Length: 149
Image 1: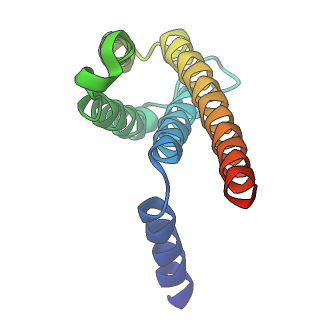
Image 2: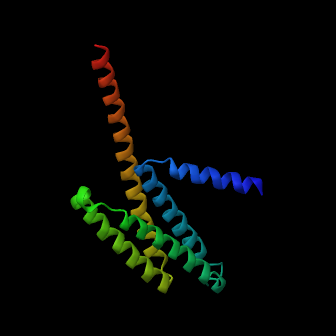
Image 3: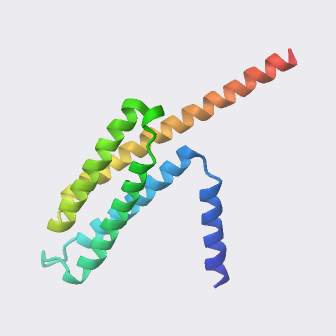
């Protein structure tokens, strides 16, 4: 019981102390987790038939992924983000449409396609974050030199 409370507190602290880029990465990670769960549940048994008992679990995982994607959509800043925000909005809209159709038809390739795009976006954000951290460190060094010099 105490372990669950400590884990919950850790997760909450991790989210509340994360920067904006890190939060986006966390959301992409969660989407990937739910899509992976749905894909695993969709795997066929040795007989080639899907387990009907998994339909509800698949649906729940898909809906969770869609909810997170919707959260990513509403967090976009169109004033500052310009064309990038508009393009991400279109992409997130497409993700949700694909996931709705994939959920209805239990279509693993469609889920995999969205999952792959999520990985690409996460990789791009990781590069942005690491570039930003490198630039921030360089700026601190320059400021330090100019103050000391």
